[in-house]
Image (cartoon, rainbow, N blue to C red):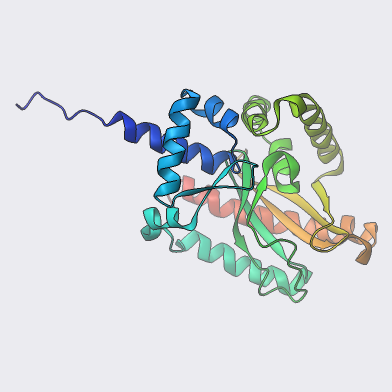
Length: 259
């Protein structure tokens, strides 16, 4: 009958909610998935078993669950670079000839920051700090930069959501450390995070990308801490990083205005 509407398949809805939560909190533990989806633990266990059998998720060495490459098949038609991405890539390649060190355009996906565009391959200094492209929001320079310049209410909402990825016993300490890093970033003018893998002494600095008055992404620059004096970082690298972040932000603003 014309008035009848097809009923939704609740099992599918639940499965997709688990898949989405695994993507957002990867590697996601059972407790995180329960908090994120509101589903009973037993239901999530059954859904994870199904998703594992279908090749969409895997157990990440007792640290939780993460997506497998087969998930890309679900959105392969969307995996082509958009015109704005191509523009940003050209901008980053030009930026590499000026700064030499690799830079990355980062966007937030849930509790992580993801490399949307990178000039790792074109930067004169080939510094591959990591093979993966996804980093914890609360433990990365780009995440801190995005949070620091977000509006206060939005910032607190994001922090509360991201803390679900942390062990419950550590959430209070992580929250305290995150707010300290945010205060330091605001005073310094950029977010910062040091790494010792794969190269000891790797440092990432990051500034926000604005669309209008809203922080929507971040630009990160990667270099070896001991290779540059702090004065050069503050007077050369940071201004250049802010300059390209501003240029990319103008692209976002133009898109939002429909130009």
